[in-house]
Image: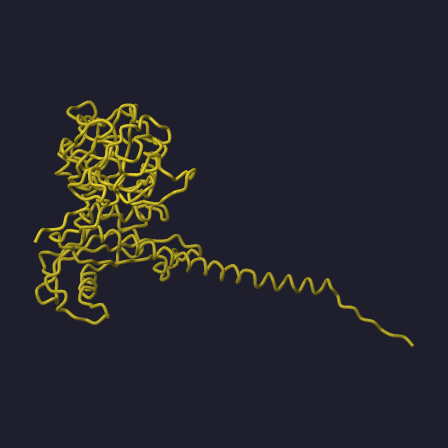
Length: 427
């Protein structure tokens, strides 16, 4: 008996599989790229939304247009490109009429503060449509119901931002689909009432600036010349002409966003001083590093174990309720006061020196363009180890340079901060 055995041709099957893979693979890549594209658009939308809200919150607190733009860009500087070709940002301001059904005509502002009108949707922006969206948002209650009566006489500020995204699939080059890679966000808030003063204490960083300082004058020109390039210890020192919003020789109490101040150290005869958050902390460079590190520790009362690198150098403050050394603020002379307010005293720190580690922390703030809440003082007392400064205001500043041997810091004024540290009104 003869049998015929037939074996499959493995080579043919392999060839068929390769053909199937070759047919399916481009489709798979397109699907994968599409998922990544959608994820990128959603993430970018969230970032733009968060940035627009931060900018609008700043405006509602009294910030000006240029500062709102700075806040928005700072919020995305680590995650999105800042090229003006892919951004268009407007600041919206106005007042709703008494009936709540329209905007008072001569109060409406729609100011283009960033970009060159190069975004995909810039040509289609309709100012009156934006105004209608603003009004609709202000007329909605917490349940989303339309109630014009709740919008009457409201002052408002808003941010309208457009940002174009680099498309993985090249959608920005396809007519009709380019809009899919352009994200838009309109955020509106009511302007806060400045008669209401918060009573919560402020966090801050350990630099105090005298309220009598005046803004920097051009290099070589008195009374407060901008530092020479060779005087900077910090990397990439900026030039005087770089600060286009700066006005020389203006008092700090009249500061506007973008003014630059060269602040000299020296207790009693300088206009800035280093701080320590309580008299139990040793006045040394190591503690200064701890207090300077982002995001700050003026409210840290943790009992770190001995040997822990986060434990401060020092001792407990009698009467504070803490039997261990703490980082947090305790007012000298009143250990029960553990929140920084206007009128409170803060202990001076005379032991910073020219520490390389302090310089590293300062460089980090400058490189990351961080805005820091600093104390403004109007009175100093008890020079030496018992020195202290009295708080007159809180301000938001951005550091641009320093020289520890010469004893100065270069700081850009951003805005006054009335969000915390205000004493309560007396009825």
